[in-house]
Image 1 (cartoon, rainbow, N blue to C red):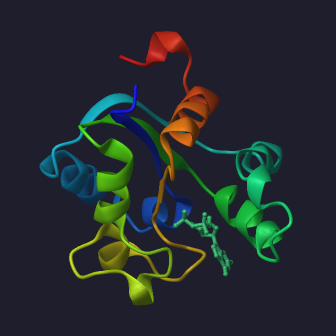
Image 2 (cartoon, rainbow, N blue to C red):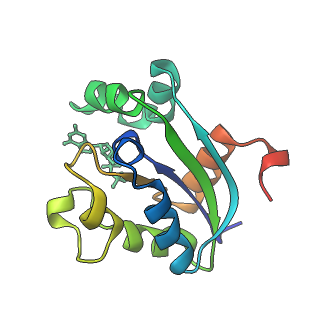
Length: 138
Ligand code: GDP
């Protein structure tokens, strides 16, 4: 399963109409979508997803933002998926993201940064299972 990662198109990108363009970039980079849904996280669910950041000063802002509107969650498959997807999305802060990355193109700030990408194979599995039952992972 180390060829899978998990992503969310965050509320800012959804609201700004970038979902289609981001999915197009994901496909063009060679990722296969093996699970996908549009949903809206409650504050409770957003807090649970980002519990690992609970001690960080921006946790409250992050939970408010991630529950502020709909997102698209997806599981992606490709060789070396976690690392290659982190390269495709770029640095957390769009001001530091490389040209041509999703965050450089679509993020507006370090908090409202358009997309999520898992940071390890282990977290990719945990995060995918947070949103998708086994019957929804193809
Ligand atoms: P990522 O792995 O690149 O998404 O970055 P992190 O794991 O460090 O942070 C998780 C998410 O928290 C980021 O994608 C941002 O949405 C948010 N975040 C990170 N740093 C900040 C910050 O300084 N301020 C705010 N408001 N949000 C932040």
